[in-house]
Every structure is written in structure tokens, then in C-alpha cells.
Image (cartoon, rainbow, N blue to C red; front, side, top):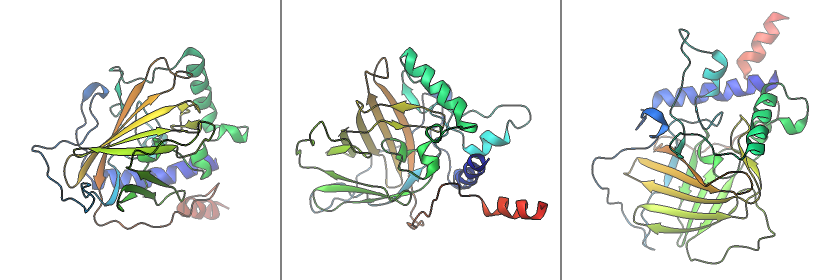
Length: 286
């Protein structure tokens, strides 16, 4: 039950942020999950020519319970309101059906991991993010904790307030590291196409993408596109090509929002942590 309680705790935070920020670009059929702008944006430029997008950002609809129905965990455990199941548009924008194109064996593994999610019997059944382990790319861009963008000359740096995670993306077209080296955050190489930061990410470790057991292998190649549509909104897209797991490359999209009033706090996550309110309830019942 510790697993459920910790997820509910994160879900409460996600619900608060979801209500504090307007949901942008939510359409039907899972085709829309993007920030929308009415006119082109001309950003300020840094000394090295980069668009200045520094600051704190986070997902508008934060949470990595599911890719195809990205509701927050609190809603998932509370259940349907008025008998109607809550559904959000799929994060998957390609294929058009909004589903992850698993090979048959991989679809079976994902379903098994989803079944093990709520009643794990072995440590490997527990989602690494729930154990306070690093989530990797692209999952870190879907979760609730904010991330900060820094832009020293020739680089883009991402820092999360969760898991002590960070990425340093060089912009000088240097080659990737050797193929025998695998990294939890992958090996990213970036370049700008107008207001879009394109990151070619290789050398990833196989990782979970959601609580519900979605995953990729060590052979995944991820191409990320961060399009800054205005000073406050950004679309994050990631195309995952992993022929050992999927039948074709597929693309997910997450709308991100600037958080000008937010601060970066150290995340003191520890395995088995509980919502203090639930701890108090346990004490009162004894």
C-alpha cells in the first residue's frame, strides 16, 4: 500500500498544478496536446545566437501514469466521477490512433508490468520512478516536477528538482560517445532550427516510460523537438525509434508552460515515502 499512497501524494501535487495553469490545445482523438500561439514569436537572442528561453518550465498536464490517458494518479485512484471515466487526449500524436505500436511480445510485457504495478511481489515490478530512481528521457519531460533551462555559450542545460537529474546538451555537432556506453539520460547533441531546439539522443539505457509499464530498450534512438511558441509556452515532442520493441517509430507530445514564479527546490524523495496526512490518519486510527 505504500506504493499507492506515494502515488496519491504525487497526484495531489499534479492536480494542484493542473488547476493553477490553463490546459492548452486539448483536442479530441488524442491528436492535440500542444501550446497554441496566434502569431510568430521573436525571442531575445543570447550572445552566441541562441533564442533566450532560460527559466523554469513544467508540463501543463504533468504525470506519467499513462501515455494514452495521461490523467494524474489521484484521479486514477479516486475513480470515475458521476460514473464517467475521466479521459485525457493521448500523448501519442503518431500513429494517429494514439497507441504505442508495440511488437506482440512487448505489448504482453507492458500489460504484465501494468498488472504488477499495484501489487508488486518483486523489486523489479516496482516502477523505478516510484523508487526515487532517475526516469530518463523522454519521461522526465512528462512528470510534475519543474525543470530549469540554462544556456551557457554553446550549450543548453536542463536541471530537474527531482532525482538530482540534469542534462548538458552541446550545440557544436561533436560526435556521440561510443556505442558501448549507455547512459540513463542518454547522449544528447543539439542544434537550433529557428525557435525549435532539436536534440538527437542516443546511448540510452532501457527504461520505463510510465507507471503503467510502457518501456523502451537500450537500442532506442530518441529525436526531441522543443518548440518555443512564445515566451510562456513550449511544445515538447519526442520520436522514439526502437525496432527491438516497436513496429515503427512513434511520437509523443507534451505541452510545457513557463513557471516564472516558481523556485527550484531539492527533491527529498525516498523510497516508501508517504503523504504526512495519511500518516496522521494512520496514527489516529490506532
